[in-house]
Image (cartoon, rainbow, N blue to C red; front, side, top):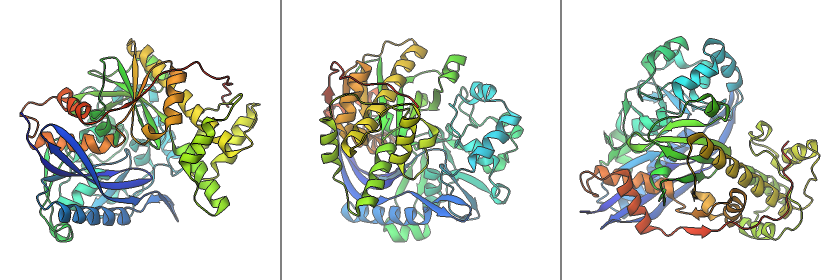
Length: 481
C-alpha cells in the first residue's frame, strides 16, 4: 500500500543544476522545478575547476525556495556527475574541486599504471579506462596530504549541509578504488597506489539517513531538512527511473554523456569486456550498471556554443534540429569518442579536422553539421548496445533513452534506425525521479519492502515514453577518424 508526501531532489549536471520538488501521491509521481542554474568549467591558474562555491549557493537558494513552497518537505537527496571530489580539512573545503576535463590527469594515468597494470585494475574495480577516473586524479593531487577527507561532489554537498563524512556507494564505485565484487574499499589497491586510506570515508547505501541541516545551511534554507542518501551518481538515479519494459532491455542515459548499457546482478570483468571498454558501476540495491561511456550531447552543445559566439546571439536549437532532419544525401560520420573532441573549445573546427583526416566531406551548412553530429552519436550508441548484447549474451529487444536526450527526436530516431531496435524515449527527468523514488522508499511511501521493480512500476504508471520504430536507413558513410 502506498502513501505519499513531497521531497526535494538536488540534481547536479556538468552543464547545469536544478532543485526539483518530487510529489508522491497514491503511487504516482510528479516533479516541479524550483530552481535551475548554470554549471561548467572555470579556468584557474593551476587548471580547470568547478565553481563549487557558486554551485553550493545556488543549492541553498533552491532549497530555501522549495521550503517556501512546501513547508512540510520531508527530505532532500543529492546526485551529481561522477569521479570529481572536494578535499576537506576541518569544516572547510581546500579550494575549488578540479574539473574532470583538466589535462593534469594524463600524468596520473602514467603514475597509476606504472604501479598497477590496467589489466589488473579492471579485474579489481571493473571500470572502463577513462583518464579522469578518481584514482588517476588522486595520483597527481598535491593537496591530498593536507586533507582530512576526500568527498565526491554530492557527498561534499551533504557534508556542508549536515556534517556527515560519508561516501555513497554507487558514486564511490566510479573512483576505481572499490572492489567490484565486494562493494567495499579495496584496501590493498589503495595502499599500492599510495592513497592515504584516512581520506576515504565510510561507505553508505542509497536510502540511508545522513542527518539534518545544520548551522548556516539550516538558517539559509529555513528548515531542519533531513538529508537522505540516494543513488548519488546521477546515472545510478537515472537507471532507477528507467521503466525497463522487458528483461532484455538496454538503456541510454543521455545528456552531456551517453551512458549505454544493461542492468546486471553480477559484474562482467572478462578480457573481452575490458577490451571493449565496458564498465561495471554500482547501482541501487546492489545492481550492476554494465555500460559504456559514449560522448553524448556535449558535441552538439559545444558546437552550438561556438556558433552562438560567432553570431553574437542565441541559436534556436529545436529549429536547427528540425532543419537537420531534412538534410538529404550522404551523411559522413566520425568517431564520437575521439579524444580530440573531449575538451572545451571550437568543436566544429575539431570535428571538421577529424572528418578531413578520414577523407570525409566536411558539412558546409550548420544543419548538415548538426545532422552529422547527431548521427555520429547515434551510431556510437548503436555500437555500444550491440557490444553490450555480445558481452552479456542477452538478446536486447528494446532501447530506453532517458534524460535530456529523450527530447531530441532526431537522435532518438537515428538511434532506432542505426540499432535496428525500437527506442522508448522518456522520462526526461529520470535522474530527479530516481532520486525522489529512493527518498520516497526510505520514507516508507511505497511499502516496507518495495523492490526496484516496484519503483519502476511507479514510473511506468506516471510517465508515457514516446516510441520510435526503426526505419530503413538513408545512405550514410561510416567514416571514423
